[in-house]
Length: 274
Length: 137
Image 1 (cartoon, one colour):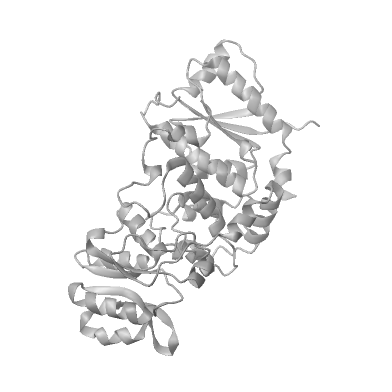
Image 2 (cartoon, rainbow over the protein chains, first blue to last red):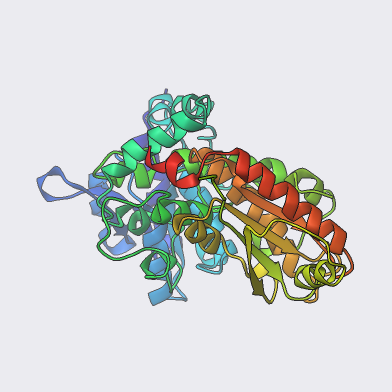
């Protein structure tokens, strides 16, 4: 296996003169990893280029592009981040014409860490690393084997530890509404802990992630209570794929199903009565 | 005392609510457990509304709208048909019986169908334990 770090450094160096900046990770003072915008004027900074642990870069890309709409930027993205960029473009959060994708293939170990079904980039023209096969998501698969009472007990136990820090929402690259339902007193009461059953906060968020979750697992990584939040999102993603033939972040031209009217054959697959 | 389930029925103004009227005018009998909330369109019923209805103590929730193709707003009920199945699955993934959420289409002329679906859904919910018992065990 070739070493991805020097390969990525070379790819960025080559691209730097053509763009205004390249968003990637950099090791900062004290060895702390942080997102960084590399520019051609300070190409020497590439010495400190870093790969892991991953950080939610697409969200920053969107913020920079909102502040500088004419900028041409590149972003180093793993498959999940690539999905994130594509979905953001579909929801008018950024313009893909201003973005160059540098695909970074995850290693098998990284795929295992994220229980990632599809770790290989598909849209990026510049690719670093060797694509690996997806791995099964045993956490979700084990959960779904449980019966109703087991599932309820599972979530009651986990959500008991939720401190409603909103970390999962804040870190989510796909949470970009100007007005958030989770801040609406009608749905989520301020200061109510532990979560009520059913846990409005988490179920509303899960519904809002329909056809949007890019399976990056940033929510789980950021959760101070270690709640396996991705289970809901991944199960719904499987259903959406089946019902609406929509895979998040896969086809740039395909609009998210929840924004469209029913298409031929979709109703039959929803299981609703005739 | 016998358990009487509390059911909230969200009915669209143009078809299902008039279907309820038709059932009433025909003097059709159906159980009184369903409390009806009239809404402009079944597409108005967001997942948040259904979830909060459960949190407020409903044992079952019905969403009735116009048949696909007959929506007063052309495609309002397409929204219902797209979100409600996802919400039903989410309930199942949360350990809540998805049968507690019922979706169907009742036109203004279908008084008999209205009475039947109310009857059947009430019986189905009555057969389940009270929701409050299930979630607070």
